[in-house]
Length: 287
Length: 324
Image (cartoon, rainbow over all chains, first blue to last red; front, side):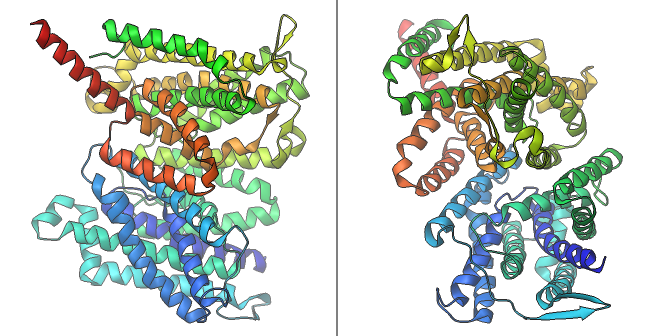
C-alpha cells in the first residue's frame, strides 16, 4: 500500500511538472507543444553530458544548472522557429502540432546521432533509502515528491506576482485587452515557452535520475501528460496539478492490483467517463 | 478552378493511368517494388485522413490506428477463426467502421485539440491491449502467418507484381470514392461545418452525425489497406501504431496539402521515395525530413499540391489571354 502511494506520488509529481508546462503554453498561446517530450529528453541529456565523466564531468549540480539555463534558451528558440511564424494564421492549432511534431522528430534523431541509443543514467542527487511511516523508499523518490510541489508553488507565485507571470495570465484571459494595456505579447509568449521548457527540463532530470536516459524517453511521459491535461482541463493550472497526481495514483494502483497491462485500459475508461460528464475536463473552463 | 476538369485535367488523368500501367514494369527490383507497394498503401491512408483532417477539420490522431486495426482483424480472423481470405478484409472494414463510429461519437463531443488528445490516448489503449493479449494478437512480436491472398487459384505471393496492382486498385478506388464524396452534398456539409459550425447547424445540419459519418467513411479504405498490408507482409505488427508512422503519414497529408485528396497521394509517393533515397544518411534523414516539413509549412502553407494549382492557374490565365 505504502509503496503504491509512493510510486503514485512520484509519477504524479513528474506528470504535474510536464503537464503544467503544456497547460501554460495552451493557456497563453492556444497551441499545443508536441515537442514537449523531446524538450524533456534534451534537458536530461544536457544534464548528463555536463555532469557525467563521459562528457564534461563537472558534477551533478553543474549539470542541473547547465540544464536549466539551456532549457530556457531552448524553449525560446523552439518558440521562435516552430511557433512564432504561424501565430495569427487561421489553422495555427493544427500547423503548430505539425511543426512541433517535426521538431520532436528532429531533436530525437539529433540525440540519437550525438549520443547513440545506449542507455544512460544521471547520478542521483541523494542516494540511499529512507523510511517513512513504515514504507521504505529511495531518497531520490522522496526528493522528487517534495521538490515538485515546491516548484509548482514557485510557478504559481511567478504567475501571481511577477510582471511576466501576470502578463501570461492576462493574455490567457483576454489577448486583445492585454495588448491594449501595453503588454508585449510577443515577449510574453517567449517567456511562456521558456518557463514551460524549464519545467520539462527539470522533469527530464528527475526521470533521468530515477530511470534511464534515451532519445525516446520523452514519449511515454508526454502521452501521460496528454491524459493529464484532458482530465484536468487545458489551461487550468490547479486542474492540471490535481489531475496529474490523480493519474499517477490511479496508474500506480492499477499496475499493482490489476496488472500493468490493464493500466492504460483503466486510465482510458476513467478518461471517457470524465469527458462524457465534463467535456472540458475536471476543472476546465467551458468553451 | 479544378485541376482535373478541362483539357489539362484529362491530360493529367491519362498521364497518371499511363504511369500506373508502366510503373510495375519499371519497379522490377524487389526493393523498389516493395517501396512502391508501401507508397501506394500509405497514399490510401494519407488521402483518407485528408477527408477528416482537411475537409471535416477533425483532429483524428487515431487514423493510422484504423490502418493497424484493419491488419489485426484480418490476421486474427484468418489465423484464429479460419475465415476465408477476402472475406476477412471485408470483416476488417466492417469492424473498423463500427469502431470508428464509436470513437467518433465519443470524440466529436469535444473541441479541436481535445479530439487530438483523446484520439491519441485511444491509440495508446489499442497498443496496450494488443501487447497484453498475447494469446490473440501475438503480443509485441505481432501475429505471424497471415495467409497469402489468392484469386482463382493464383497466389499473389508468387508474383509481387500482383500486390502492386492490388494496392493500385485500392488507391484508385479510394481516390474515386473520396473525390466523389467531397464534391457531394455530404462533403460540402463537412466543409460548411468546418468553416462556420454555428451557421451550418442553424441551417439544419447535424454536426455530430456528419462528423461521425466522415470518420466512418475515412476508415473504410484505410482499414482495407491495413488488411492488404497484413496479407502482403504475412504479419500484423504493433509497429504500425508507433508515433513515427503517424508522424510520417501526417506529414504526407500536410506536405501534400490538406483538403485536396490528391496532394496527400502525391506527397505519400514522393515522401516514401525520398525517405528511401536518403536511407544512406541514417538517422540524419529524419532530421532532413523534419526540416523539410517545417520549411514547407512556412513557405508553402497550402502544401505541394497548391504549387501545382498555382502553376496550372497561371497557365490557364495565359491561355485565356492569348485566346482573346
